[in-house]
Image: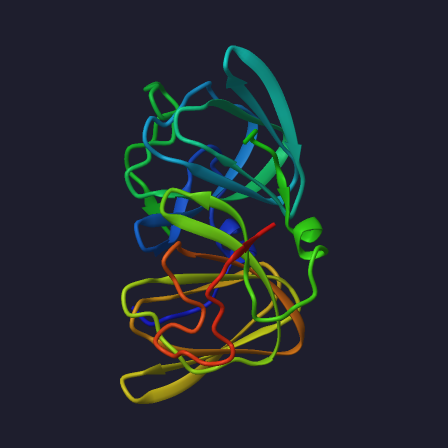
Length: 125
Length: 125
């Protein structure tokens, strides 16, 4: 495959479904994905994988549970958060929000939870 | 270390030196870095590591040598390129350009070349 530049806006224009990350590239063992988010996801954690969220457009609210305490981060465009493995998190967005994700090829979107939000097959766009 | 959001603009405001990536986080085996670029770097390659460049501000020109042929990609904000391992590349920027990098902790900025541009010690900001 030839090396080409990847426009996040162009990739994000190719789909409308939410909470369903699409793969746009791979860097070593990590997949680079884009996703559209709106509403609330599910509390989950990834046992063995860290996960990076970078906001491209919109606003991302990331609730976190650590050592029994809960708090939330609010991210806008150009802001990122790295969720370390094992940490329970719940992403949500009031308006439609676009994000870039970096996480291992093995990461399941719902982590330790399996429900109707679980996406087993990752589309590459 | 508590989980906090990372503002790329805020991190990029903390330094002025160019071609000297600063670590802002780690996702699994990959470091997340920011850098300021202006002028021309050096042709180099990373034998065993892919490298992601995402333009945050400015314009990045990425010259590539593949199978003896040379070409160039031009990237603006919100555009990224993944340089696969082994591919010779030469980043340059006419105006000061800010980028986000994702690459393994083991990656040396000048790859297979060692010169005055080589940065052995990575600052974490």
